[in-house]
Image (tube, rainbow, N blue to C red; front, side, top):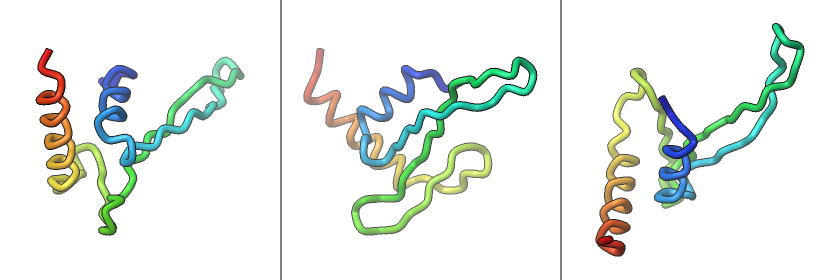
Amino acid sequence: KLLYKHLAQMNYVMPEFILVESTFVHDQKSFCMLPDMKITLLPSTSGKTETFTIGPEAGDSKPLRDIFWTRLRDIILDHPE
């Protein structure tokens, strides 16, 4: 389950790769507008055009995974507490 906490952590580590848009969805049952989020993983900003997907159909997301773990390691080394 993806929680807001997880999304905030990923956005802190890789802000240029994650785009979060707040939207409203019409609920047919209650006839109300419910808040929702659209989360997009952006292509690499390093000049390469790469597409990343999440889930069982994801395929190889190794470039994104490598960037994430490298940045996470740097944050841990900078803040050992």
